[in-house]
Length: 173
View (cartoon, rainbow, N blue to C red):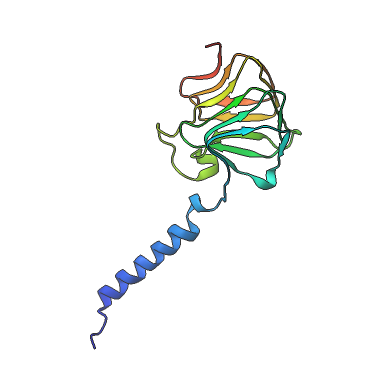
C-alpha cells in the first residue's frame, strides 16, 4: 500500500476546498433564480410578481399580451439573460413604495450577481408596443442595449435608468 505524499495531500485539499467554494460559497451561487421564460413565453392573464419569488430570470422573450396586466411588486428583481427581452403589448405596472425599488437588469449586473459584467452581457430591453403601457415609479433599470424601446406609452417617475449599451430610452423604430 502506497503512502500519500505531503505534496499530493496538499493538492487534494486545495482541490476539495475549491470544489466546495465553487458549488456552495461563490457569489454567483448565492441567489436562486425563478426562471419564468426560456424561449418565448406569453403572459395571457393578469399576474403579480412578488419579491419572494425573485430574482426572476428571463432567458428569451417574455410577452405581456394585450388587455393583460403584469404587476411587479416593490422590491422585486427581474433579471435578463444576454439578448433577452420583454415585450409589453398590454400593461406593465412597477410602482415601488419609496423604500424598495423594482429592478430590471442583466443577470450579470455586478450589484446583484457578484460577477464582473462583460460587454456581451447586455439584455435587449423592454419593448413597449403601440398597444403597450408601462407605468413605473421607483424603478431601477440597467445594463440593457436599449432599455426602453417605446412605440406605446411610458410613465416613469422617481426612477433610475443607467448603463445602457446604446440608449436608455429610445422612442420609435
